Image (tube, rainbow, N blue to C red):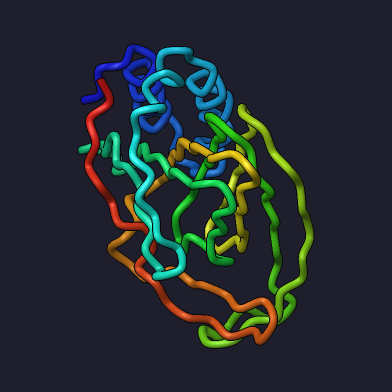
Length: 196
């Protein structure tokens, strides 16, 4: 279990919510302000300066630091570290629910919806529906199969991510906005990392 008090408090609160609320949408709406409170913790921010940046998007390698995986409910707490000028693939998170919070830095978040009927797993027609520059404290609520991309600017970005499930063990969709092609990826590699 993570040693940082703000993270321990967050995890205990989420466990209590999961124990009493079965609806995933409601769970995530309740957890969202709790994540925002944790992002404001000065000690967590200081610790994040030691977290490693090891992505290589050009080679398709992305990793998440795995801070916590709940043994009973399966939710996880991750971090995604992005260097200046780094862009994720246009992607979804398959069946998982995600709250992506910006701890440090900032980035551009672009959201898409599928214009087609969504039944093809090899081709999609996408419409851009939102495009915004976000700052520390911003939380993006990404429901299952919602399509999005993040791009950092001149500064590195540190995200803290609350997910309904650990990613990396199932296929996610990566989209080519120009051609509509969909390719499959297992998503970020999960690197266990103890928060002290």
